[in-house]
Each structure stands twice: as C-alpha cells, then as structure tokens.
Length: 143
Image (cartoon, rainbow, N blue to C red; front, side, top):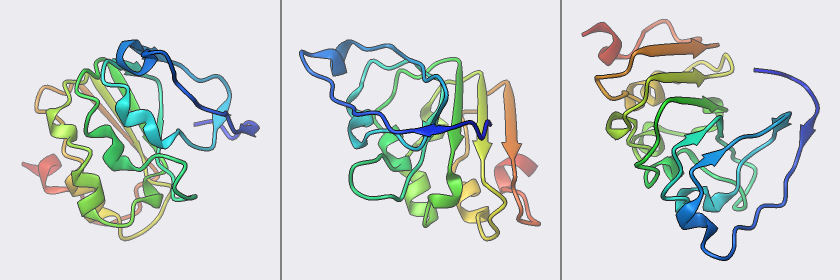
C-alpha cells in the first residue's frame, strides 16, 4: 500500500465497455474509484478496490455486489470509510471465488462488525489483513 502521489481520474465508460471490460489496472495511487464500477459486470481482475466516503461520485463497498466474475486477487483499501456492517455485507465477498484477498483497515478501531461482514468464500487460499486494530477477530476466522 503505497503513499505515492494521489491522483484523480475522470472515469466514463461508453460504447458497451462496461459489459466487456475484464481487467482494470491502476498505476500510482488512486483516491477512489467511480461510483459506476459495479456496472463492469465482466470485470475479473481489478488490482485494487478503493472504498470512499468523499461523495456520490465515488464507489462504496456495496458496489462489489454485482462483480460476480472476480477471480485471482482482490485488494480492498479504505475499509475505515465503511460506516457499518450492513454496507460491508452488500459486497457479498462470500460469493466471490478469489485466490487472495487483501483487506486494509487503516488502524481504525470499531471495525470488527465490518470485518465480520467481509467473510470470504471458503475456497480462499490467501488472506492478508493490514492495520486491523480491534482486539477481537471475526468469527469466520476462528471457526
């Protein structure tokens, strides 16, 4: 998780790209992803998913819900921006067949409910958690 220079990208997918795009890579560090990212129904490999609370123009964790073709690795940053477990549940990570999942919590306390709602698919091979500050771990990790 780099602290290199942040940049904002004007996002607009036209001409049916939202139904065809399978891979999305970012170079550098982004501040957020567009609200319409959930319409990229064929997306398989976003290298990072950045949660934001900076307004209506950027995505929320629940926007992962419709990305049912995700494969490989997913890194979710900005989980400190998720306000409650209900928003985290909308991501439906337990239905995503991933090999590796990275979760970044930014050392914010009181995120156990969010972490609990981010239960991954049982076939997950690798889980990396960054900056998780709660004393209790999610039940799905303990069972």
